[in-house]
Amino acid sequence: QLQLVESGGGLVQPGGSLKLSCVVSGITLRYYHIGWFRQAPGKEREGISCISARPGSPNYAESVKVRFTISTDHAKNTVYLQMNSLEPEDTAVYYCAADPPLLRECVLSSGYTYWGQGTQVTVSS
View 1 (cartoon, rainbow, N blue to C red):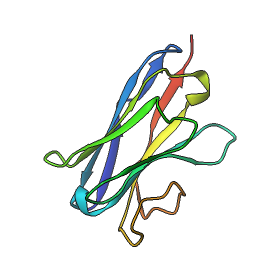
View 2 (spheres, rainbow, N blue to C red):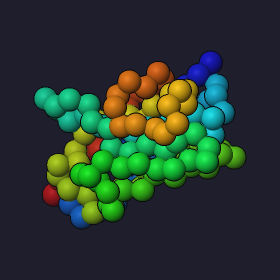
View 3 (tube, rainbow, N blue to C red):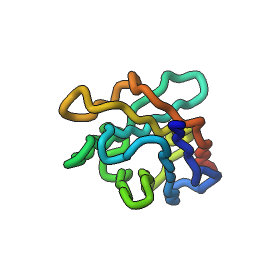
View 4 (tube, rainbow, N blue to C red):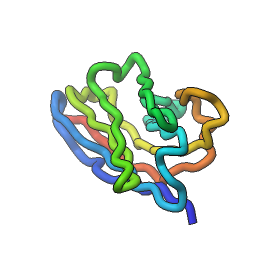
């Protein structure tokens, strides 16, 4: 059974860091495009980072480039999102998603096939 389970969210002060994890089961991570998305209250879901199926080049939205880093541990079938210099505008529910590599490169649109349940990130003093 395919599952994506996010963890690592929480409350952090502006300027702080969090590392989100997404444990994937039921598929082999390296053969899928993996994306991180977020949705703030009253806003549409936003693609913020993705990593393509092997060889695995990353892609970032302008809003998080330099501050966020996506990485994978294929031995653990887990994808991570390291978030630094967090801002109140980063407050949202964060989701990971997986998609068969029908395109050569991953994209930041939300048409992924498989989704996790999300983890809340709140940036506030």
